Length: 343
Image (cartoon, rainbow, N blue to C red; front, side, top):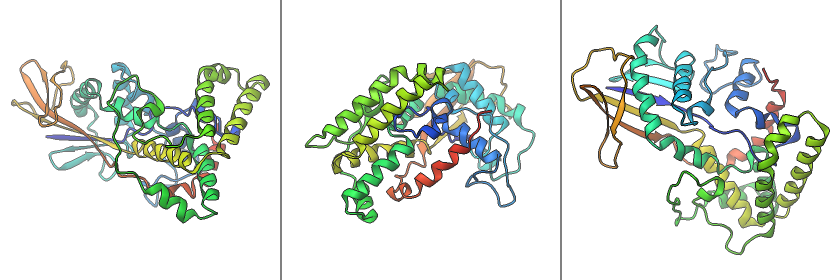
C-alpha cells in the first residue's frame, strides 16, 4: 500500500478590501508563493526547517494549480511537489517513508509517476479539494482585517485580550455546515450564525466587500496608478470605519470564520491506495486511470486501468481548531510581507 500526504495550503489569493495598502502584493500572488520567497531571502523561517538551514530554495508548487480542478494543472501541481516536496508532500510505501521532510530523498521520481497518476485522477474526481477551498474562502478579512477586528473586539472587552479570546473560543454547539454546493461562495458556506440582533456595520462591510470584487482585477491591472490606488484606498478606509463600529457578536462572527479558514489552509490531504489485483512493484505511468467507484462513507473508492484495480481512501487530517491567541502576534508577522519583491 502507498500513503500520500499533501499539505495543499491556501488555494486562493486575497480578496479583502481590508488588506493594508503596503501589502497589496497579496492580491497578485498566493500567500504560499510570497512566504516561499521571503524564506528564500532569509526574512522568515519555516517551522519544519532544520537548525542548520538558513535558507531554502522556493518551491515550484502553486496551490492555485492544485485547487483549480483542471486536470492539467493538477498534474503540474503534483509534478512540482515531487520536484520540491519540502513539507508539502510526503510519501510512504507500506510503513516506510520514502519522500519528504523526515527522510533522505532518493532518486525515486520516475518510480513515483505511476502513483501520482493515480492520485491525480482521485483528486480530480473526488470533491474534497473544492470543499476545502470553499471553507478557505470564508476569509473575507485577510489577516490584516482580522487583526483590526480582533483589536476592536479587545476594546469592546475593556482592553482584555483574555476575555476577547475566551469569547472567540467559546464556539456554539449548534453548528451545522450548510449542504455543500459548488456555487456557494464566501460566507454562504459559513457554519456560524449571523448576529441574532443584526449589525448595520456588518451589513455595510459585507456590501463593500462584494462591491470590491468585480473591479478588483481591473484595478490591479492598472497598478501602480493613482486612479486605481485612490479607489482601493477609499474602499479600504470605508471598511476600516465599519470595523470600528462592529458589534461584539459581529466581531465574533467574522473572526470565527477567519479562524476556520486558517484551519483549512493548514490541513493535510491523505490518500491511501492499495492494489486489489496483483501488480508490479513499479506502477507504469503510461497507464490511464479512471475512478469507477467514488469513496463512500463506509466503503473505499475504486480506481482501475484495464485489468488492474486499486482501492483508495481520501481524507483530511490535521484539522484541529486554531486558538484565538494566534491573533495576538499576527499583525507583527504580517509586516514581513512588505519585504516581498515580486520575482
